[in-house]
Amino acid sequence: YYFIGVLVVKAVVFLLYPVSGLLAEVCISRYKLMIGGTFLVLIGIVMAVPTVTVELFKAENCEDKECVNYSLLVPVCFGLILNYVGFGLFESNAIQFGTDQLQ
Image 1: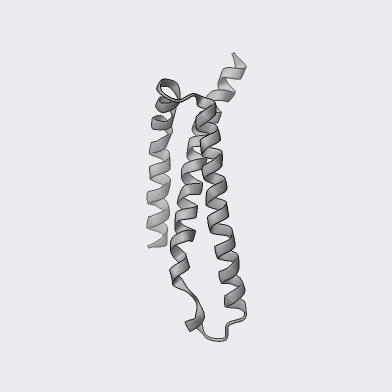
Image 2: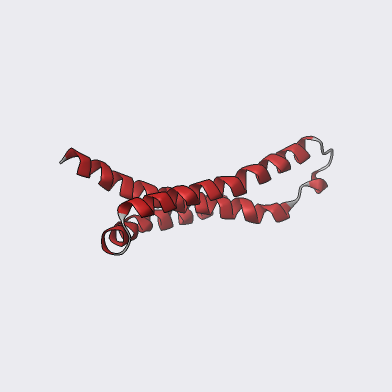
């Protein structure tokens, strides 16, 4: 199931490229969308990394498998999704920004 979930998130990010490019050209400036994508990546990292670190530390000090808390899986997944979406927003507009610099 993990592989299917990763494929779905990557497909959504892949479909986000033309949508974010259109948004950047029509409604929002390219720079604002790149900054927004950067903030989404940072928020995703802030949500996912401490949760994973705490869980790994608990799992090292735990003798049985019962003490692993699966309720913290939601913030980790949400943080990773924010990370993917923010990266997609940033990358789709950074490529256009780079090609504009060559002209």
